[in-house]
Image (cartoon, rainbow, N blue to C red):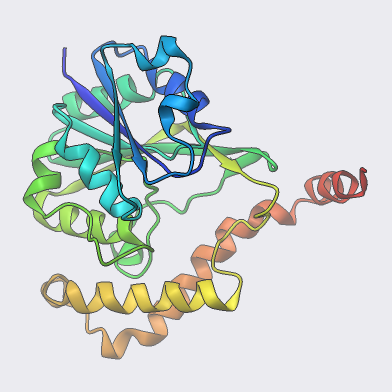
Amino acid sequence: MTLVSIIIPYYNNEDTIAEAIISALEQTHENIEVIVVDDGSDMPLTNILPDELTKLSNVKLLRQQNTGPSGARNFGAKHGNGEFLVFMDADDRLASNYISSCINVFTEKKNISLVYSEASFFGNMVGKWELPPYEFETFMYHNCIPIYAMIKRQHFFSVGMFDYNLTYLEDWDLWLRIINRFGGVYRIPAVLYFYRRHAHNKSLTKQNDQSNNSMYEKSQLYIFHKNFEIYKNAGINIVDSIGNIQHYKDRYFHMRKKYYNIWYKKLFYRLKKRRP
């Protein structure tokens, strides 16, 4: 059975990391390894996790000085042995059949380099995450594929892993390079990933405040410059496409914010906010 490495960067997620690991271990696909990378947290994993998790043979606990999510994911991948890689966040959860569903797609469909599923929110907010469908033209201007996509290990290292220079949009940069080199994308039409929303971050997007929006735009320009040849070969002139960049950005955020436009969900959060 194909070995899959599930890599989880951990940075001060002591309240949620055990839940994330357990969801990774409870996969119907039995041949997995879970690699947790402590990226210089204040509280080491060994002080948080129960012994029954730390002693499992298919759980690897690694620790390094803080380098950020890109560095932590790369470090975990280097210590993994799986033919396929999945990167999940330390406060999220996988459905028990996520790994098996992705493997089935890779087995049944040829020329696929990246597989992911639909997702739902939980925690401070509930409901389906309205991800835009993957379209090549739209994707070239804005990411629509979350971090938890399954990819082939060989592809990951062939394109140079995550870019250490990026702390924002690093997944989009990686997906661009993989899709450009190796081909197709498939989204499983089922909710198999659960994305936690915290009380301190109630926005569907993380680009709402000015500082984050500036970081987003700087990262986007860096990615355009770095991957210039990819855009050129796709027949996309970046200079002439600035208007399209804003158009696709607005379209993407509009689709994500549709969640808030349903009256009963607005009422739910208004009432929840009033509770002591």
